[in-house]
Amino acid sequence: MAQGIAIGLIVVGAIFMLLAAVGVVRMPDVYMRMHSSTKSATFGVSFVMAGTALYFGDFAIAVRALAVVVFFFITAPVAAHLIGRAAYVSGVPLWPGTLGDELRGCYDREAHRLNSTPQPEQSAAER
Image 1 (cartoon, rainbow, N blue to C red):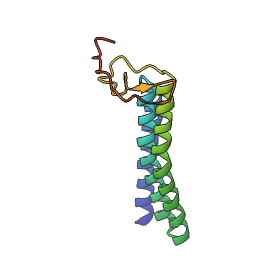
Image 2 (image 1 turned 180 degrees about the vertical axis):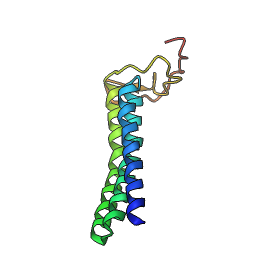
Image 3 (image 1 turned 90 degrees about the horizontal axis):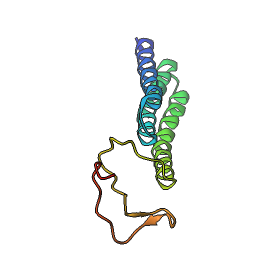
């Protein structure tokens, strides 16, 4: 019974990781690709590690699997934030269908910091 549930968890995790890979290929800009890969891959790793811990049924392996999940939940959002910030600062363009750019006019790209007086946001049609 436990092996069947473990295999089910691993399959669900593999599906999430497949969705992350498809999202990286299909999404139109770096920001959406980053979001797709971070969220789906985190869930995928979590399910695979839960299935692994359940399949082996050993406390030591379960602790290691939990450590992997905790490490992934801590590092994935930080990495995604840094990738997104680096892309924005280096001038990677947004997808034309993006509804808003909250940092437009507020971020000084040369000094790498926020301006003290924000500029009004432009609509998608004005860009």
